[in-house]
Length: 288
Image (cartoon, rainbow, N blue to C red; front, side, top):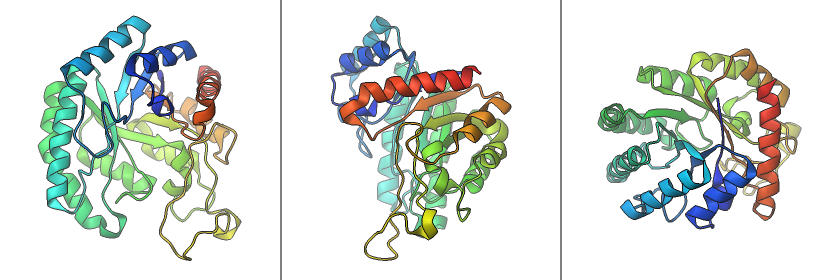
């Protein structure tokens, strides 16, 4: 198993300083997430050969490896021009990931929930173009359901991953999304959701969140009433309402041996303290 840090809270640091900071915190792995000078959100990658070499040299120097690369593109967009652009960006990012000698990428379904069928059709169209490239480069892919994607809930997301029917395409369970993944269930049975994923569960994102469905749906007052905005947080473990006994207990039950990524985004003013705390807690839970 690999315990990685998503260094998003350190994205303003130069690449070498970011890698050095992750190493100083005690992490052995980085999940490379969007940063403007390398993988911007929803835009073509900015990394050229020089910047790729800079990152590889920093990883060697500081004794850290890439567990995974996390690009976000609109590959399930019902707008065909937008989808085609996203596929081009994906192709370049697959090349970069291969140059980085990283064996894994992970991402979200994307698309629009109010146009779910069209978005899924776009998703399959993108996969038809991209799966051969993943296979050629020997890069695996883990996918997660995300709030406001065309597929937001655990069971249909796992079924969609299984339908891809590739042993190297697997499921990522994101703990701070638990209260969205559970659909109408107001409590979120984390153990049941993770067990449903079973052998396809190869990646977890770890951060806490509050249950936005609590207090009869009145925990957060949103205006205008009835807005479709999605709410979730990425907090330190223990600051929200995720059932961590169920989460870690089920990982142990399933003999989880994939990637566990700490992905707290809420505390940039105390990013080092938060990241160190998360590593300590995750290590203790998964060691036991």
